Amino acid sequence: MHDCTVVMIDMVGSSGSKLPRIDDLLTAVGSTPSDATYHNTWGDALLAVFPSAQAALSFALDLRFRVFVHDWRAAGF
Image (cartoon, rainbow, N blue to C red):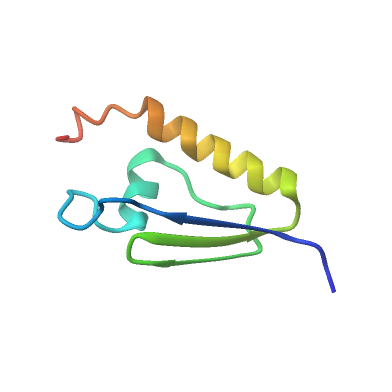
């Protein structure tokens, strides 16, 4: 058995939005769970397994920052 950290993300209010799938959001902000040992998406949800809490937190904080600073007006929002 190996230790790991799981990150789960669900986009609230995504149905009817211009980015209905989490893949669209990750592409728009240029962030992918590249350090994850496994990841999968289901519509507006992401599950990613990381080898350490540090790797998971790094991804989560980077994604949060990229979503915050992204120019959503230029993207049509």
